[in-house]
Length: 67
Image 1 (cartoon, rainbow, N blue to C red):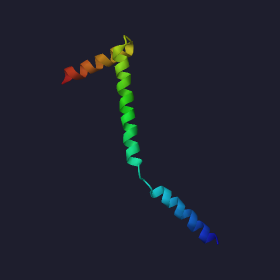
Image 2: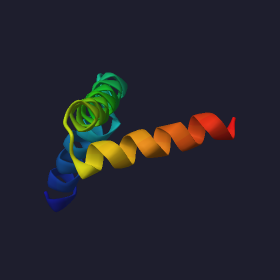
Image 3: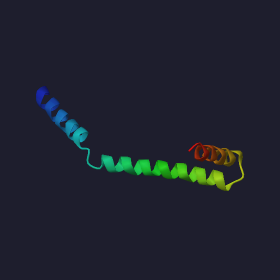
Image 4: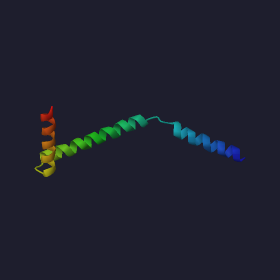
């Protein structure tokens, strides 16, 4: 009886663990959202006349001049 119950629970658990359908797509969507968020912060920093915007512009200028 206990063996049958454990076997059933184990089968259900492994079925959920092995099901990776859609996981890669979700990872790509999350990565895209992170990139968009970073670009938004940079754009907001450059547009405004803040110390963060100036620091971003100076850092980008330094990277471009270093090439």
